[in-house]
Length: 329
Image 1: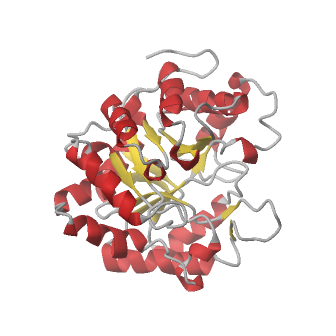
Image 2 (image 1 turned 30 degrees about the horizontal axis):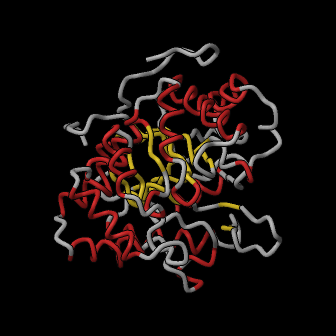
């Protein structure tokens, strides 16, 4: 594993706990499913219409109620919350949601894709960006003691990352090597995942510490197979977002990945990213994966062990860097 100047000593070993907003959580405590890519508090509003918002005040009770309901009905145990710098992150609100819902929440650090980069990216060097991430990982987010448990959702758009996105991705890889966290990406509409993987692994990060996002929006099973064969996780993480892709297509793509033998590299989630997606506002909600999509997966012949693999064991392995056959998960 490469060492990169200024990043500290790489941390290659498996983590035996997950860092949540309430502190370290043993992997053995996560007995139910996880949502591997969600937003509980977020602000991506650039037009003033307030649609791309999940407000810490206005929407927190609805978000909390949905998670509590999923905990009661399906045993939901963990949410990986990928709202990062420049996306309206609020670690205090996340801590409240976790405490009130009884569902563990993992917070994130990093930078989204270029359209949402804060000014701090500008012409800042990879070394300085890496140092900012490592500081948050070691000391806490936004003046709190809440420490992130993942780097994400680190974004790019197009087939190749832009220059600022490249620096952001490299800084994330270096911070991951220094701290032992994993990296979850945002591949805009599913594109550019192979380029993200090339950049991250070229910096020394092992593929099993990488999740390539939004692959259910890319109707290209060959790309999914290539990503999975490398050892990276392939995220089918916008389940229910029918305006982007039909769930019928998602199901076909998922089954193709499973038939190719890549169940152990598949992650599932809904990526709730605006208040209109909440059940209280008539949307599909965080429950869509469990109440709508997974029944279709079962009807297609996928057994409960594979569903547990995709919704519990794989997220835990991704977060901790555990091997596929890790006995403690």
